[in-house]
Image (cartoon, rainbow over all chains, first blue to last red; front, side, top):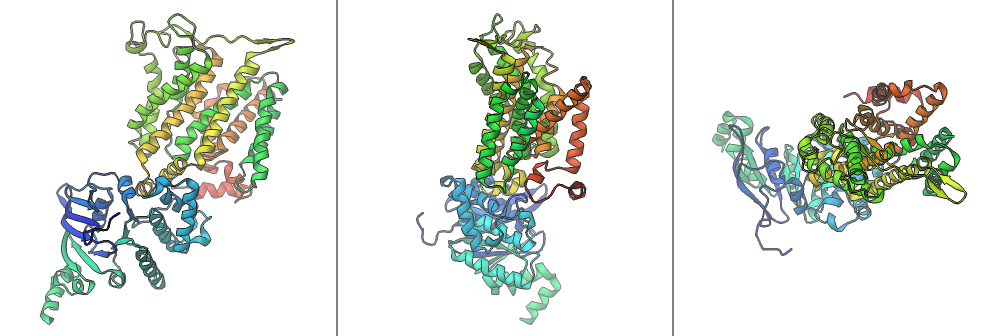
Amino acid sequence: MTARGGAPLLRIHEATRRFGGLYAVQDVSFDLAEGEILGIIGPNGAGKTTLLNLVTGTLRPTSGTITLAGTLLNGLRPHRIGRLGVARTFQVVRPFANLSVRENVGVGAMFGTGGHRRSAGEAMRMADEVLEFVRLDARRDEPAESLTIVGRKRLELARALAMEPRVLLLDEVMAGLRGTEVDEAIDLIRAIHGRGVALVVIEHVMKVIVGVCTRVVVLDYGRKIAEGTPAEVTVNPAVIEAYLGKKYALGQTRAN
Amino acid sequence: MNLAVLCAGLLLASVAARPQSRAAVRRPATVALLLLMLVAPLLSTSTGILFDALTAMCIAYGWNVIGGFTGYASFGNVAYLGLGAFVAAGFMSRQPGHLGLPWFVGIPLAVGIVSLVALAIGLAVLRLRGHYFSIATLGVAIAMPEFINWDFAFGPDGLIPNFFGGGRPLNFPLVPDLQIPGATLGADRYLFYYLGLLTAVAALATTALLSRSKFGYALVAIRENEEAAEAMGVNTTVMKSFAYVLSAALAALGGSVIGFKLTNMTTEAEALFSTTNNLQMIVIALIGGTGTLWGPWIGAFILFAIQEALRTLSSSDVFLQWQAVVFSFLIIVVVLFLPRGLMQFLRGRERFSWRVFLRNLTANRV
């Protein structure tokens, strides 16, 4: 893989998805550079998960293009996109409940970017390494259904990491976690970033966005209303209006 | 004697199936089981029920691939069982217009052709999930006997004239008893028994390879969560299609051997395409434990041990007449009280007790 200086790893260009008359995502464009952590925030129903589904191929864009390192992803089936190096976690976790923790992760290693080079046994050895990394190794032989919600979130991350992705899309991994668990998860996201994976983080917990993201895209009613550093977007009147209503946005501007 | 063989086989299979046992225990148990099955015709004068158990097991192993590992409950595998028998008969029959191929050519050929048919049907029905898939496969089971009687294709002036008999009886060639110096080896007792054993061992070996392979993991991932499997790089369409074809191939293998022994294929095809046959494979997989390597083996031996015990006790055919009712009842009971089959106990997490049945009853409510 040749590093083309500055060229975006993931480029989303005027992506639109319509459900009947409703635009769930409309003309959204942004880039993700190699090694970047990008946050996506927005009120409920802003189109964050829909956008993620467009990137992973779960949904097809009505119009617009999505490219990974120059390869057009539009119209590819989800497993093709997964093998090209886009991994995701699900907002509502989807473990393979009756498989062991190790087997769950092993499936990612078998069918991810390098899966075709790996036997089932080699994939399981790789799963052990990843489980050590997310600190789930002590529970690797237990069925996934026996994990608590924290464990399941970690498992979701481990499965995605075992695919050796170039881009990892995290869909609200913090939801349902408590204070110290959030801090641990933030450390884990930083550690994943340290492995050279670019991340897109969809999150409601602002502590996470401010703590790990270098850049944030804000969606509202399917449109991109702001983009910038976390510090910039949190004082952006359009963002405040989207979250809190017009009155607060006006107040904010006046105070400025 | 057959009952003793079935019970001993059951015991050995249970030992071989325990995942927590060491390989040093499981391997000898597997070898002992296969040796027992090899010498069974010497122990028993009529191996008919053992033949029935082994071929039914092969078909149940086939159902287990799609219904157990992949989690797509097929109610149409009987179509491939029957089609396998008819296609094999079409190739092997010595009646005019047929090729009269030997069994070791005709049966694999039939399995291959049924696999292609299943691929075409699978690509269509596998677009459906859950109940919708099950209903569609049920339609396949109902349509297949009609297809065999389709005059346009197989009638006297059809595309392949009278391949399935064209309204007249279609017969497999009769197999003569083998004469060796000093003894006569009965075809039923030896040849057909070993053919049946071959189908069961082929099915067991296929499942053993599958359960350790990437293909097997892909199927189980699809069963557990298809969206997650797809996002993780599993080509679900291809994997499901392979699973469906393999499932049909094992049904055709068992079916063609059953047909070979029956000899006379009635064009009505009621016996082979019967609901009893359709339910039997599901009952066997459910009793033993779906999605497991030894489940169908254990399920088949239990079912036929019960059948044999009833036969020796009552010496009437009442059980056979009521078989479909008994199977339906067993499905309900097993699904309610033991949805993971007897393998749940062999896995060793739980001891055998009535409490387990009650817990299953409440725990598996949706």
